[in-house]
Image 1 (cartoon, one colour):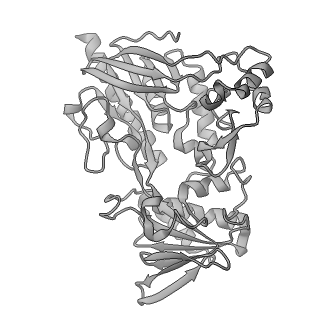
Image 2 (cartoon, rainbow, N blue to C red):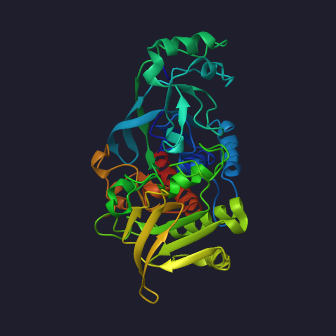
Image 3 (spheres, rainbow, N blue to C red):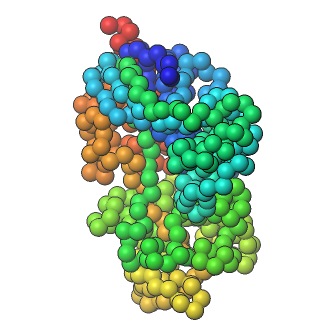
Length: 426
């Protein structure tokens, strides 16, 4: 059984992405007892699935390593993975939470030797790579996964494959008898850092994501570029494995649209500008990028980054909301149809690959919240007194980039600390 002590002096953080880790660490480093809950088997969230950040074009592994080091050496912070909140009751300063822990089937004897992985053959779609590749039934989600323990997929736990994994382990780390657990925890304040999810591109019928293999999303494009991704860092078309050197980026794919997401997700323009750099990085002058846009939102310090992309002769900009995408059957090339509003010229442009800049929406639907919270029309949690001692952090509150998410999470941690301080002083 998992033994965790929590009181009304405890701060519970729900969600272990960059915002959740930041909030948990900032609160714990003030001396508060903090429990960090993450429903995946590892910390890191969607940031861990990026190839590079903008505007510095650095890899996220650096920031992850620093946060993981801080977590390891902070005695005030308890991390529970595969943990999901199923109920919250109470009020500011005195909350009760029911947390469900799903079994990992691996205990802390794991040395990440990989023998269990070698012993099994069953494969499943790899969630970390957005289903672009496969992973085995005994796996480490990614190289930077924290904790660095293997996971036994529940679909093989009760099968011969599970027994093969257990037999291969020299350290007694595999426990196929693990059961789901329910924890009852107390907290004085809760930080809701459940992050975001990409808008479902299948709903944008005109763009054919559900029909054409060479139409992908911006988050999938990140995984194609990563050397640890499904293609080993090669920009290959899903349809035939050929190098994709002529790439179209479609902005506001499902965003700023009353039929999809009404809001602007803020980061999409910068994400696509960043990804044009990937094409140049991979192919040099042979790589061509075309950005189809309504307008480019590159504010403050990002303006210089935008200007640098504009100066790249291998990047073109077409001011247009693409009307539809068809496929050239002979080549498999997506064909984009629309009107360039600068001159009102109709076009039917072929590309090797199309990348849809899909927007950000909250990961958790408001209708499934375990407690009533004030949210805005887009489903993001508002900062409001009526939410008591529950504070959103990062993209649970709005569509933020990494930098703003970290800043927002720090502010939320300070608000939570103030709540438990008030309880202590009462």
